Length: 545
Image (cartoon, rainbow, N blue to C red; front, side, top):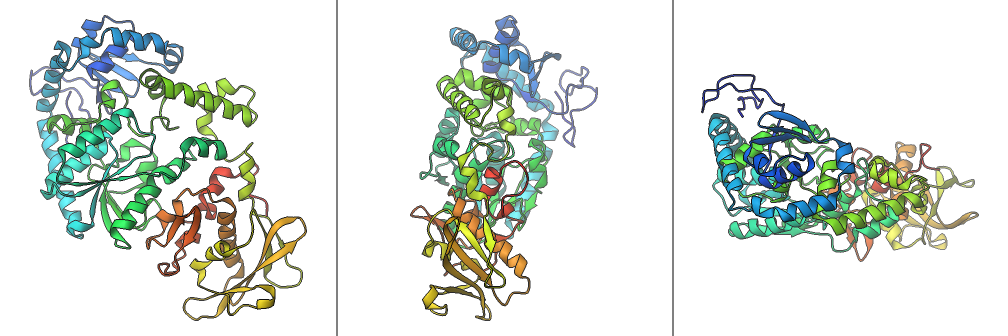
């Protein structure tokens, strides 16, 4: 196996070790460890000992066994007996024990791979170190964070940064989604113990239960991964806010452009863009242009410990039930996490039936649930439908329907627009004014209201505004948040000042911290004004108005 300077697997040439011909296999590859070799010998009905002795590489579900291509199809995975596979793996586990002959042979093959590609390893390592050192010049040591996910990419990135800066005491931040692989938790603990000079912080959402949220707004799907904000980005934001306040920080991530189409939207260095999920961060990606084979070349060449889930055959390690996981990953989980996999499938089938899918099992097993969009069939979908009527007695005033009663928590939603003043409003009608933060001129008038057809209502009038329609649109965003907030924590991540929190189960904007930048009411950063708009919007276009 040989890799060119630009990261491409080279066309036929002479092997630097044996002087034989190098043949092209694929645009990218990953090594197949003995544990996975044993599994594919069972799946393809190949001689176990013979397969374990061979050099095996993979590209997604395509395997190259001593250079010979074998395709593991979706049909094969769906028809395979996972219980029989689990039994076969257990009966032959001695063949792939770490001290077995097959593992020692694999390690020799890995050493040959590293030796054959030493020039490539030196190149990516030196280039990465220069990149890290350049980015670190703009920030103090106390402003730098290493993002740790437990995956191979963040592991390689963190190791590269530590070596580049000769600093083993940098802060590491692990976002525990509560949905990690068992091997990830084991590896995180191993990593923490082996990096005892670093500050290893864990961000975890202990206020929400993943399954209960799934029951309310449906399971996450490829285009609707509410779980990321709620269980990863949001909790990480809280840790950063507590440690750094409103300080801008530099976070080194293991983001790679080759990993997904979404990650291609990033750059090597990203800041002040909507692609950056936590706006107080400047995100630097030392391995942005690396391929899978580069990551493995670095980990094996530098002898860096990594997550054992990769040895089992997983090519990505995130949430074990992520809708972005492929069929092969799901199959692996049915073997190595049998009980959780069965429970998750049962929930998905019940959910499919609840939203009217007549072919619920096929809908789940074919993966169609991953393409689900919006809140069709969910009772909670009504919360994001912004309902209002125009006021007949006052110009530029609208009467909005609320899902629960008007109170101070509703008024607090208007802090981004300016200063909240109950004193200046008309007391007889319980009116509250919002004053422009610069001129103190009233721009919004708010009062509780009774309206036929609305159980709870509020009247909101715009005043002294250059664009009344634009202001009412932003007001509508805050009404939607009040009605539909599921504590997804996305708004906390958008706010650079740390002014937005979920306190006591309520959405709260601290008027002492808010600088009225209005990012939290800007379409660019929050489509529809609230993340729930995306997750609960029903089929047929725009929400009711």
